[in-house]
Length: 250
Ligand code: HPA
Image (cartoon, rainbow, N blue to C red; front, side, top):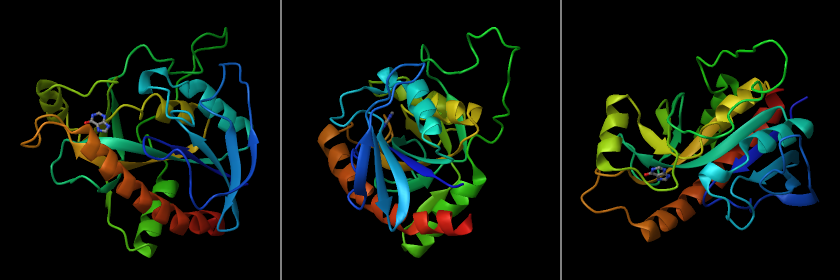
């Protein structure tokens, strides 16, 4: 059965068009998720919403309990996860405000609990992660963008950095040499954990700024906030168009 969850990132702590039915506080073997799960309906379809940084946006990227978040979603019967991520553009073809659908990811994070297969006495388990995002869900998002008449760049490599500080110019040059197009702080270990749980997971990334050294001006946090505000309006519109496709297709 199809059941969609949306993990909201910076700038998306609630979903305007979600008719809230209930909130559910969950405990997991890995601790507490970022916030109670918000159950609601969008266009008549049941959706669960989880703000990654907490309802008041108080949890920084390196402190998010990714294990608890994904585990709790699985526990709620979720099959598909759309993760919304704010990113900086390394590839300057992606201007602030652009919506991007990454197809690859490189993990530069450290010290985050990144696997469910680390501590038990079970045999060593590996998962295939060659294609880190679920193509069926990427297709639904592309279709939603077309219906909403929104531009969506499909295909980009996401560099997941530790944060919470932004990168140096040299770090961005290195990520560029590595082949990354966008950089964000929350893409991993979330995508890997979703794969370990067998969830169909895709990231919808919103470009908030040009990455360090990629614009004349220094990174301006106020400008990022403004860009994210309009970017998230586009995200909501895209989701409203994509969700019926997901449920109709299954
Ligand atoms: N770097 C890392 N994460 C980000 C950025 C950035 O420039 N912009 C938004 N999230």
